[in-house]
Length: 457
Image (tube, rainbow, N blue to C red; front, side, top):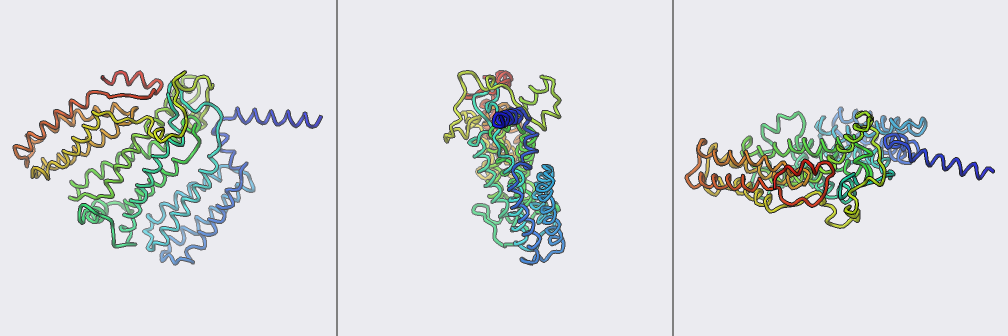
């Protein structure tokens, strides 16, 4: 009799768990899996002892670490004793502060910078990543799609690109904060030094390279969050991830593009970081699109946007993907790049942008004409690479007005020779031509396909 009752209770609990909303499950999970709180307590105690162990030489950094360490211990204890899931996620914000503290207080020693950075990453990992790793039930492929944009393979190249940006930015931050007098620069002489010590960089109240490193660290950590269904189980997280990668990443790229105009120098590591960010944007658009389609569907079904945004949801397994045409979820190498293709038109457009950037040095162009060629050429490369993301293919049309400007610019700006002028005319006309065709689209993206059909050819 008791065994039957136990089996019935277990079945009811299992059914209740399956019917529970993803947001509620993630809030309760820290109270059911308590072991991550113990390493957080240890990290808190380590942080309290660190200023006296490593000699921070900063009252502000010392106070910050003692307060932060105490908060980690208290909040982790609250989870253990009171079973409060909110306290666990509050520790995630403490971890974020630890990434920022050495920049805010201009930590005078590299030990303080390194210690807070590592502890911050570990705290976020234990308080957020570990407790959000649970597998959710329901379909993984969005309705009308041919693949899952949130799979581990899909996130892998984004994480790798973020790590590249993080290490490059940390290297430059170490120079700005005074921990080293060496900064890597193989191509532009003192270019990186000029950029990092420029008036533009000094306008920021904190190290701009360090702020970039924090942004990349957050992007990498967010890349690990959630399971392969996070586009519908964690809309809030995918939204914040999209904001950090797409608009903020685009602003970062624009600042790097403006370096020759504002500073008069290029920075190799900055350019490589910008290139990594470009591919991150192209590879992130599909997941943000899937999340947006899910939220729209839930609101059409009568659910509030606020509730769907924070709690996520599911739909019947039979509605997943495109019937008979869904890609396998096997983690093959090329599955990392589903949602991105490189038509020959965009290859040509990217090449034209690079040529335009190099043309002032080739033709001896000076003044406003040279600045225009370098700036617009970099913009052409930016929009062409972003348009390689199939859901973002429409972005290629931005190159059309840029092509018009390329044709017109040498006639109204000074500094271009006759050869350089006609080169610009040829580049501009060719750019307009190659920006019209859409190129091949390999995958299906649900309702977005209807919009894409109007994207010409």
